[in-house]
Image (cartoon, rainbow, N blue to C red; front, side, top):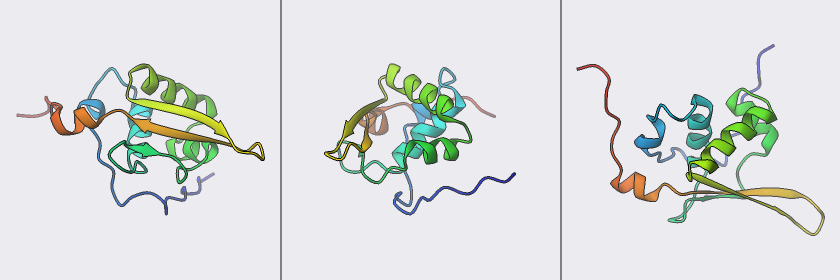
Length: 118
């Protein structure tokens, strides 16, 4: 069964990602893709992705995984100090997540990817 493409209308046209995160073999491919997706929703110098980020079900679909895979990728990024997820609920009990990317120093002062073909 073909998966339906995720709704990305609230994403920026591009996302700034740190090559040192994307090329780090210590990060799983799923964590790198989640980081890139969150980067496309990050706004402002604080690199916060909040209201416009797809819900957990849609994020998992964008990653091609289930909620357990999403949770594992997010836990990996949080453990590495790249992302902080803050869970909150409104007066109606609806839960949302704010993601903050802690990659500004890596974006503007980090190392490029090394390796590849010479």
